[in-house]
Length: 570
Image (cartoon, rainbow, N blue to C red):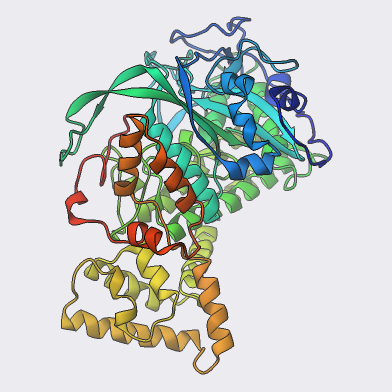
């Protein structure tokens, strides 16, 4: 069993020694190490990992690292002194040099394997050995697990060099993708969306890698050139990095009896998941079968809530495979994500994603991931038909719970006390016909306008007279359901609630691109500016900020490669 979190006593971390005192390796201490692993963590070539829950791996430091940014918000939550990021020992660890960390921290990190399924279909082709035993963390290496202020956190370096799961890659992350993930994790947190978090970001001043990307002004679907770009290491933080694909890997091994301890290793990681993520939801005194059922119900609640949050803020994951689905029920792995600007129900930023991972299909994608989660758990209930039947009921109840969460989400975006299906259907149709900006429309609507002029700022095209009449009628119907006429106090309260539901400032890729382009040349001012704006998404900010960041997408960026769409290259 994982160590229980310590007493919630506020801490103050000024040095790496202070952080070391909080280290508590529940994963390393309670799960199985790959029996073929090296003791030193020098394990960088692609190979098959047949058993065990993790592989010790020593990160590969980036050359001549330079600090770019850190999250002051997360530092404050963790009790980290803001100056800690400039501490030499701290900077060494979080740029991949783990050789001289203070005890009891380990001089190596760890990587984990997982399986891949896409819409319920199991895949092994992505594994270089076509067995599924070589797929996992190819460039993400966890280096610390600590209990801080009563909360367990795992700290993981993204772009820290190859692991046995690197599939022939270099294990590096480019500055572009590192800046995007660093900024978006804290943006999502500020939006109120469950997510992994951003700790700090460093770039190499001398090391570059060659990656395919888009030429300036390109409208190509896929990258049309190769560019050398600096490498970076971002540190992401979460209660755990356990994924549905991870449970799948051990369930597959148990199903095929791949080794004598296969079923036991599945049970171990499920119990570890409960200890890490569901201590308040699962009674560990109950029999295993009952714990599994409580786990499934709790994850279903978190996952459906997560998708409703994604839809609320216009976020599209782009590639919601089971290996990108965190068992803790939060957003993880920001690769080809995007945010809806001009409203398209089936918006998809990733050129390789297809409609099945598009904006309005995210609930269906989540359902298939939940089904694979339940399928993995079922291997532990094979001798208990009653528990299997109950697990099947929980699985089948996903659609109903997802629908309830979505209805509540749409009602809250419209400031209504209850969901009205006809009103929503009419609205979605009008938004598509008029080409509205998703974020600006709902923010303007939060002011409860009396006529169409109050939402006109969100229109990308001038509506026809017929559409104007339809909007006028819809607004009248909506205001009637609000039932606030003549009650100014109620109206003010409703406006406040809507403004706390509908952000004013959202991620706009065409405003992010200049930040990482300038960062390539050592200018990080725009990164810092975006940090400030995106971590206050519901606030009314300065006139300068509003003019720059609260605006429609310029026509020049429509269908632009690397802006409106992008490959998974990172």
